[in-house]
Structure formats: C-alpha cells, structure tokens
Figure (cartoon, rainbow, N blue to C red):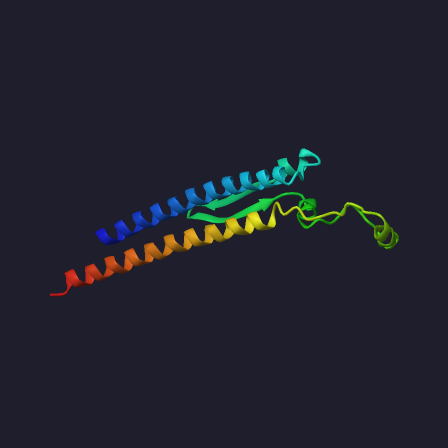
Length: 150
C-alpha cells in the first residue's frame, strides 16, 4: 500500500514538473518568435508581433497540449509571398525584371525554423523525462519483488 502512494506522489510530481516545463517552454518560444520577427524586420505594423501567443491547455491530470496563435499572414511573411499580386501583373513584371534590377520579395523565416526547432527540443526533454520515470518505476518494482520473495 505504501508503494502505491509513493508511486502516485512520484507521478504527480512528474506531471507537475512536465506542466511547469511546458509553460516555461511556451513562454520562451513566444519570446523567441517575437525576437525573430524583430530581427528580420518583418514588423510592418506591430499587429503580427503582438498577436503571437502560445496557449498551454491543461486539465486536472496535467498538460494536454500547447497551441500557437497568430494571424495567417504571418505565414506569408515567413514564406516571402503575399500582398495580392495578380497573375496578369506577374507576367508583365516578368519581362520588366529582365531589364530592370528590382528588389524581389524574399522569405523571412521567423516562424518555421524557430518553432519546429523548439518543438524538437520539447520532444527530446519530455521523452527523456518519461524514460527516466519508466526506469525508476521498473527498478522499484524489481526491488519490491526481490524483497518479497523468500
């Protein structure tokens, strides 16, 4: 009976530890995305910068998920496309660009690299925590079996 209680306490502390880590990860990821926006000078207005938000979804058992919210045009900035260029205008400009040096739109990867690198990091840390917890519970179970056998 004592073992079950200690297992629950360990499980709750692991859940709390994971929840705290995920909250810190989300806050830092939000900061890094905003820093990338600033460094790429992708802030035509502060609307995109202020709209970047991470939300940690929690229940009584622990963290269920994390979601990132920002306006869809943030992806267009990331990919270097948008601003309503029509196909007819593009064909006219195609011939002009041969004779004029024109500044082309280029990607400003504020989202893709930063976000997915942070997701990989979160995945690695949480995997290690779960593996450690599994090893501890297996070792504890084996010790209990060894002690209880005559």
